[in-house]
Image: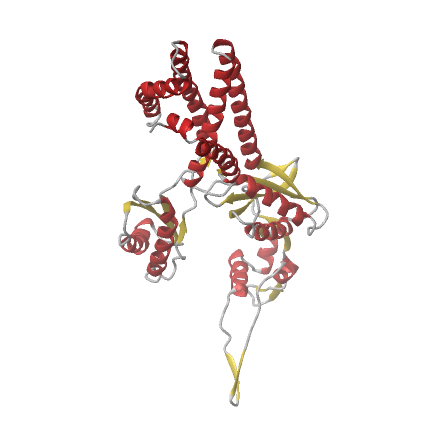
Length: 449
């Protein structure tokens, strides 16, 4: 039995389906994940290992080969590429395209365990390997934090507080801070002073390195008790730096602060700097978890940012640099207006050419078809973004064409005196396969894209 026949014989079921499509479509539209662009799945990760002072050949033999041997035991690998340079090893791992998207993160976690096991076989001077697997993350929310009359250290402390609070939000995946500068202490001493006192730069560097060295001081045994001795000589500020004793060539001792000028500064040249309205700033970028609704996550982020602002001192301000939820909201609103405009135009044109009833039927069918698509998209873990919205607009054109063909066939049969149920079923049966073939051909044209 055709659907058109069911409409006449089972009207209660038809009205039920009609209401279900409307309610289900609206609820699904509100729940479906909304993005600006479709998610891009990156099947690659990179393992980076720093080996200070080693040549490229030493890095290859002692680091890269060791890690590659361990990584080759992983399953579903497409390829492993490595690059060994002076001081650094970089290994790129690519998974097979057949690996399901929901299992990719599990594979990277398993790879981390493999790399951690291989790290025990690396030479003593090599730093722990770092696994980078966030190439596909999109940081769609970007804030600039300005703080007049605050140092970079103070700004970074406040930014870290914001980062911790943001990571507590449901749907937030990662938070990154950009623009912070590395503090340094400049030691300025004239060559005349060094020559007169017999002090050389290498002596100053050795004294500073020795002061910062962490050593085990041992324990103090008193009878049956053992007391751990803790010697804390770490340099915390320029005052500690100025108290370091420097020995001249003749055995004389000098305080570093007495023979040199010591001042706080930042590493030059400044790197990754950010300015907003000619004020130094730090950037706080936020990415969301896969499958989340960016509109809801954006609302949570804005609410949390307003809450955080109450706990920060005066002068610390936040400004939106880029906020993807606003872009997505505009895209969704644009699509809804396009849908309304399409229906209105279709109804008006068809009212003029085919009559009022035909125009209203085709317009209603257009809306119902779009609403019926949303639950399917939700169940299939689809997303609303510019590509899928564009597909909706293209599909609406095909839907109108198909509807016009069917309605025209019905009108022709009615004008011939055919009763209404027969006209409806005959037109649907007569045009079903040709319209299906034409629609599939149009859909196939978009498959390579």
